[in-house]
Image (cartoon, rainbow, N blue to C red; front, side, top):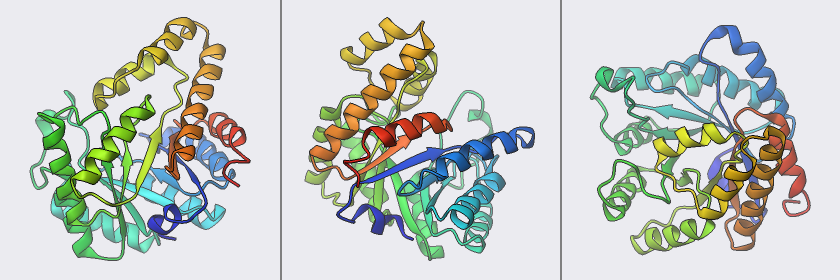
Length: 288
């Protein structure tokens, strides 16, 4: 099923992101966690993809597994920052052969570890979107940044680049994590004013590990509101309390999003079935 059809339906959607292992020795453990999340029967599941194709084989096989064995629609990530055009075409063929209909097209993060290995067949995600569109047969999504892309000189420039990506063929946009819903509401107003009309999927990160969130925020440019910082300061030394507080905060965000007309929510599950299950349980009547 195409993601655009799922998120345009009247019923609120709740989906989860999972990530494949980096090495084969952890494959079975991570596959088991992903399958436990698939058993929750979310609206769809996205499967991430390492920059340069490091997890490409696992991304395809796990996407196929949740589709064929659990009846859950997969959204396969595809990054291009360290790929040639031939690399990308080969991965598109593999996804098509596996029966995958949906791709989240991403440039990929430039880090200290990979910046000297970057290939330059692709500079922007919009170029990847254009190639996927030309290949044909996929529903294409893209990423957007309510707090602004960390490399953008301004939000105006960032939104202009986003418009290029949508014009190239993106049918929906999934946000980077954010912790203040008002930031998203203001951002949506601005991108609508810029002529971007595709549906927005709100990306929510339940923070259950305080140290983990610091690195994620540094990569994404996400800002932490004072209210959330207070939760981290108070509970970060108590893992059980931090987990409970993080799930409660994410649940509150999700309920507010649905109440304000954002009908599609995507939870960054970090491959933790108990977190995915608890959030789904918390809003079970809302998403009926």
